[in-house]
Length: 347
Image (cartoon, rainbow, N blue to C red; front, side, top):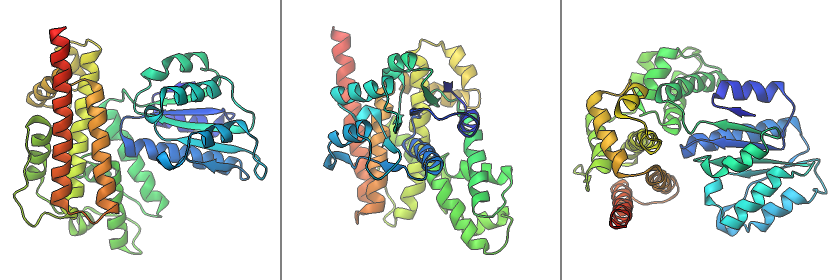
């Protein structure tokens, strides 16, 4: 069963029988991870004796995944195997995962994420009655905005606080539609208000993210459209970097959606209607970018961004260095895809 709406997907989870496989398609890495976590937590709550297994990168051989999917655990009733990105697997590993989807074990559940579902179209069609798919890869910008707004309201409610939809919208927009950054901002405001239940616009203004929006957007623009995006502010710190990365993420996400429309052969008029919330001048810029770079380019750039975010939280590297490193990584990707385009032209 396939859903392209999160609310419908969640309603199905809580009202229908359990399936052996849950597939989450979402281009944004952080959002995909949160959605996967939600499904894993739901399965763990439904089966309290279940064992949850998550591979730990290259240090954890894929044979452990195979073992967990095929061998009944000794001290648990079920096992839940989590795979964050299907695209990170080798061809042979993908075939093994698809084999499990088609012939699952009675005791095992698989929760797998992917930035694109095209590669899994065949297995999804074959196992459509035995798996649940949440496909947000083609989600419209305004639908994503509504989803993030509702998520922020619910996140606030879990902390015992109340927030208006309008204020949630303002926080989302101030954070460049970056889910992780919006959550950080929300928790900061919740801490500020103390015992008070309701969050007010004044609270956000008092402790909100302090950065100059035009400068942030100019840097994010320059990163994708120009070859260089130098920092000229010597006081640039991690508190400046994080919101800036959120703005970059917004450009990457929107650029990929334009690129997907171009790859599908949509006309400029069709794309314009599809992205009616984007200004015509901005549409022209995104279209130019989409005609130059295919969807995989934006997916690879998003992975570069995720790597920088991890380094910003788990290393002592300075914010200017991390930004310059991101600029270099994206410039490298541009050169690689420019060479690919030249090769195709010659062919």
